Image (cartoon, rainbow, N blue to C red; front, side):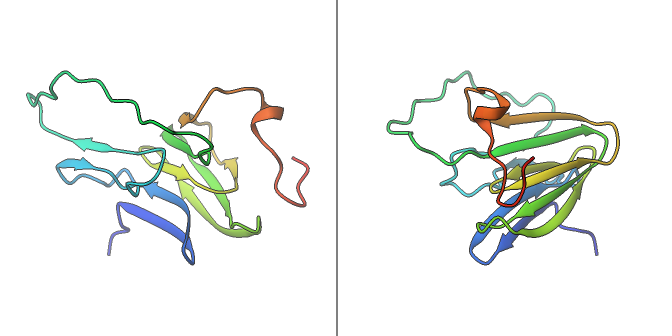
Length: 141
């Protein structure tokens, strides 16, 4: 049996990450992220000739103090992602490769298994590495 096209990696009620595999190919618009997430990931699988009408997105009032989420799309190469739970303990590891995406919701470490080309999306503005990140407990890196 084939692996699911969308994988929710859970620790009890906590979702640590959502992996969207390149095998997702059902026609339509798919939002694998829960509707309350501040970073929404949509996958369009649509035929040539379809038109998405001109539009602009409305502002959402009161968006402050949101948890930071990070989305990675792997164009080339492979990576291993260690996922940590809310206590900052290693929970599991997942590999992602070309065409796969992952939405990171809690602590993580990434090891590049091959040369990679990754597109990253997260809330901004990006400050500096020192201001943007903090090490997990017991880790100085």
